[in-house]
Image 1 (cartoon, helix red, strand yellow):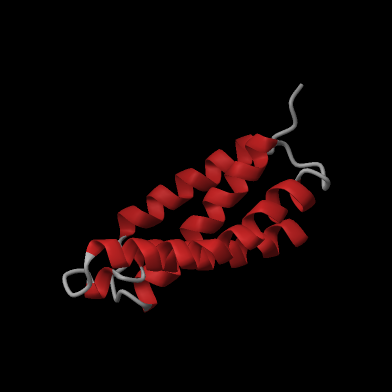
Image 2: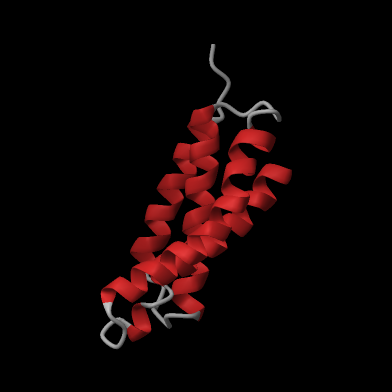
Length: 113
Protein backbone atom coordinates (compact mmCIF):
# COMPACT_ATOMS: atom_id res chain seq x y z
CA UNK A 1 0.00 0.00 0.00
CA UNK A 2 2.91 2.37 0.70
CA UNK A 3 4.01 1.87 -2.89
CA UNK A 4 0.63 2.90 -4.31
CA UNK A 5 0.33 5.98 -2.07
CA UNK A 6 3.88 7.14 -2.84
CA UNK A 7 3.34 6.61 -6.58
CA UNK A 8 0.07 8.53 -6.41
CA UNK A 9 1.74 11.52 -4.72
CA UNK A 10 4.68 11.32 -7.10
CA UNK A 11 2.42 11.34 -10.14
CA UNK A 12 0.53 14.39 -8.88
CA UNK A 13 3.81 16.31 -8.87
CA UNK A 14 4.87 14.82 -12.21
CA UNK A 15 1.62 15.68 -13.95
CA UNK A 16 1.73 19.25 -12.73
CA UNK A 17 5.42 19.60 -13.68
CA UNK A 18 4.74 18.33 -17.20
CA UNK A 19 1.33 19.84 -17.96
CA UNK A 20 0.61 22.58 -15.40
CA UNK A 21 1.99 25.28 -17.63
CA UNK A 22 -0.16 24.49 -20.69
CA UNK A 23 -2.67 27.26 -19.97
CA UNK A 24 0.16 29.83 -20.01
CA UNK A 25 2.36 28.17 -22.63
CA UNK A 26 2.83 31.28 -24.77
CA UNK A 27 3.33 33.68 -21.86
CA UNK A 28 6.38 32.14 -20.17
CA UNK A 29 9.76 31.61 -21.90
CA UNK A 30 10.58 27.95 -22.46
CA UNK A 31 13.80 28.10 -20.44
CA UNK A 32 11.87 29.37 -17.41
CA UNK A 33 9.24 26.65 -17.90
CA UNK A 34 11.94 24.00 -17.92
CA UNK A 35 13.49 25.30 -14.70
CA UNK A 36 10.11 25.47 -12.97
CA UNK A 37 9.27 21.95 -14.14
CA UNK A 38 12.60 20.63 -12.88
CA UNK A 39 11.99 22.23 -9.49
CA UNK A 40 8.58 20.55 -9.26
CA UNK A 41 10.02 17.25 -10.52
CA UNK A 42 12.42 17.24 -7.57
CA UNK A 43 9.43 16.59 -5.32
CA UNK A 44 8.21 13.89 -7.70
CA UNK A 45 11.50 12.05 -7.22
CA UNK A 46 11.25 12.33 -3.43
CA UNK A 47 8.26 9.99 -3.69
CA UNK A 48 9.01 8.03 -6.88
CA UNK A 49 12.39 6.65 -5.86
CA UNK A 50 11.25 5.27 -2.49
CA UNK A 51 8.03 3.98 -4.06
CA UNK A 52 9.97 1.84 -6.51
CA UNK A 53 13.19 1.19 -4.67
CA UNK A 54 12.42 1.09 -0.98
CA UNK A 55 8.76 0.08 -0.85
CA UNK A 56 7.77 -1.63 -4.09
CA UNK A 57 10.65 -3.99 -4.53
CA UNK A 58 10.60 -4.90 -0.83
CA UNK A 59 6.85 -5.56 -1.03
CA UNK A 60 7.55 -8.17 -3.70
CA UNK A 61 6.64 -6.36 -6.91
CA UNK A 62 8.77 -7.05 -9.98
CA UNK A 63 10.18 -4.16 -11.99
CA UNK A 64 7.63 -4.88 -14.72
CA UNK A 65 4.78 -4.78 -12.22
CA UNK A 66 6.04 -1.54 -10.65
CA UNK A 67 6.19 0.13 -14.06
CA UNK A 68 2.69 -1.05 -14.90
CA UNK A 69 1.31 0.26 -11.60
CA UNK A 70 3.06 3.58 -12.18
CA UNK A 71 1.61 3.96 -15.68
CA UNK A 72 -1.95 3.24 -14.56
CA UNK A 73 -1.66 5.71 -11.68
CA UNK A 74 -0.15 8.25 -14.09
CA UNK A 75 -3.11 7.89 -16.45
CA UNK A 76 -5.66 8.18 -13.65
CA UNK A 77 -3.99 11.30 -12.23
CA UNK A 78 -3.62 12.82 -15.69
CA UNK A 79 -7.26 12.10 -16.52
CA UNK A 80 -8.43 14.01 -13.44
CA UNK A 81 -5.96 16.81 -14.16
CA UNK A 82 -7.06 17.17 -17.80
CA UNK A 83 -10.75 17.20 -16.89
CA UNK A 84 -10.66 19.46 -13.81
CA UNK A 85 -7.61 21.70 -14.39
CA UNK A 86 -7.34 21.91 -18.17
CA UNK A 87 -11.13 21.64 -18.68
CA UNK A 88 -10.80 19.06 -21.46
CA UNK A 89 -13.72 16.72 -22.19
CA UNK A 90 -13.49 13.00 -21.51
CA UNK A 91 -14.47 11.10 -24.66
CA UNK A 92 -15.69 7.55 -25.18
CA UNK A 93 -12.54 6.50 -27.03
CA UNK A 94 -10.45 7.46 -23.98
CA UNK A 95 -12.60 5.13 -21.87
CA UNK A 96 -12.03 2.30 -24.36
CA UNK A 97 -8.28 2.93 -24.35
CA UNK A 98 -8.20 2.90 -20.55
CA UNK A 99 -10.20 -0.33 -20.49
CA UNK A 100 -7.60 -1.94 -22.74
CA UNK A 101 -4.86 -0.75 -20.40
CA UNK A 102 -6.71 -2.33 -17.49
CA UNK A 103 -6.64 -5.55 -19.53
CA UNK A 104 -2.88 -5.19 -19.77
CA UNK A 105 -2.69 -4.80 -15.99
CA UNK A 106 -4.68 -8.00 -15.56
CA UNK A 107 -2.17 -9.94 -17.66
CA UNK A 108 0.81 -8.26 -15.93
CA UNK A 109 -0.34 -9.67 -12.59
CA UNK A 110 -1.66 -12.97 -13.95
CA UNK A 111 0.26 -15.80 -12.26
CA UNK A 112 2.94 -17.26 -14.53
CA UNK A 113 2.81 -21.02 -14.99
